[in-house]
Image 1: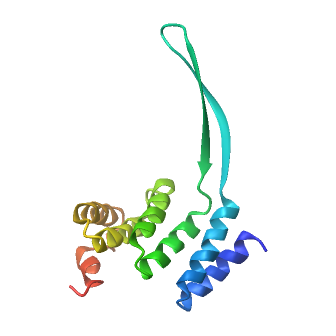
Image 2: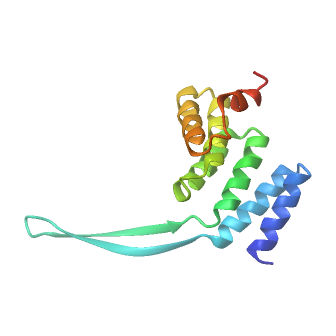
Image 3: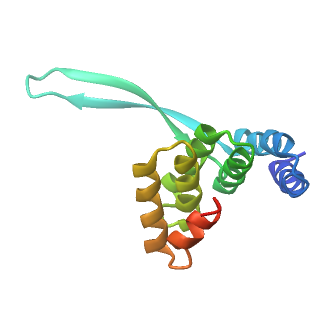
Length: 141
């Protein structure tokens, strides 16, 4: 079974509201499509000394899986995990208005109003289909 299989199964589980099962499948997709690379950065200082630092650069895999897993976390009210996943989506696709909108929702649910407002403003700037009325409407307000 490949990553596409788990992704498709995660989508189907989300549709049937099996959010924990969907999270498990999206996590498998992320694990299967993420990679890391080790490299050394060498810095020469003004005093002539040389410093070597090993770093690991990570590719965060399939942003769609992160987005969908973030939505599943949001649906089961695990807001910090949702924020984490939406933040990864935003890091790799900063023009994704929906990720900002969803992350704003999670922040709002945690009473982090300043962060929610910042993300909501960004979402609206990126895509005018999003609005404050739409945002607050999801909370019955």
